[in-house]
Image (cartoon, rainbow, N blue to C red; front, side, top):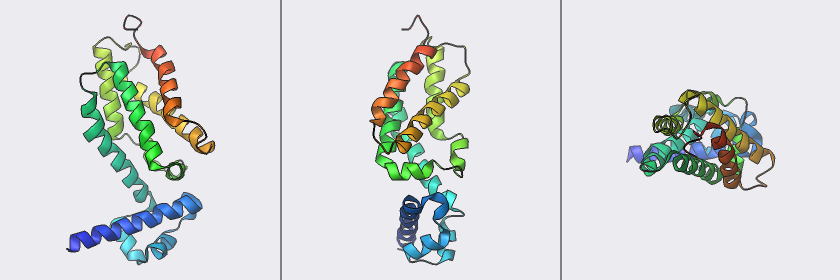
Length: 191
């Protein structure tokens, strides 16, 4: 029973933090305001999160878990381009399901999670590595470097989606960019 109550409290704090970050932005949402909204003490906040950044971390952990447990197994047996298309489609839908307002919160200069290598990226690196081993992708670049470039492109589209207030189809835009990206990295014999 105490475990369930603590999970409920953590969820209340988490939701209050996200609501305030949506309303006031990352910097504008103070821990004191979050606690007031969740009707908990500041000490309670620190039982679950060390910083506001840890609230954002929860979003990333959820996405990484999804890519490791659901997306990666579903890629097996597909060609490299098919795997990349599936990865990009899942990535776009994950951002859409997260919601435009929360994605806007993620795109702030204080978000340390952008600079960290995460499990989602390791799924992409495995796709690229296998594609190079099978001859579907060129060997000109290290897989880790292609992952960086790939995420630069995907995040750039997400950022633009935020700036444009969601006025274009994120999934469609990412798929179109993937086609352009593939032209540059696919082995000509595999095309």
